Length: 78
Image 1 (cartoon, one colour):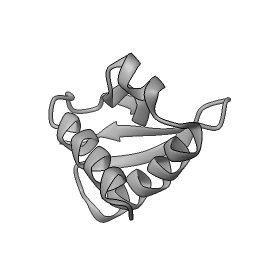
Image 2 (image 1 turned 90 degrees about the horizontal axis):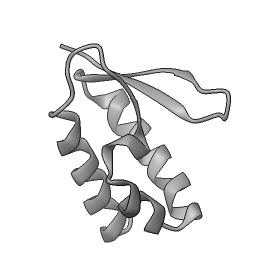
Image 3 (image 1 turned 30 degrees about the vertical axis):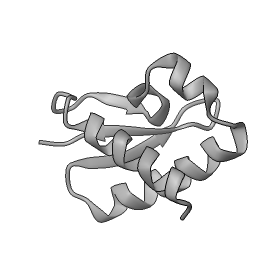
Image 4 (image 1 turned 45 degrees about the vertical axis):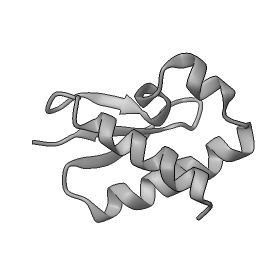
């Protein structure tokens, strides 16, 4: 994992702490719009995989169904 990607994933994970239990979100929701839009498309895809891997190791967020546009949704757990 590139150092930059690792930093971005760490920032995103920190943002999950601001969510309420049961709240459903997309990875991009954890960033201010302009920040997410500045990330290259291929990097966003890589970040999605890395974030999903982190979720699978943790107990505070779960992956749920994907959206109609194939974006992974997540839910904050208690």
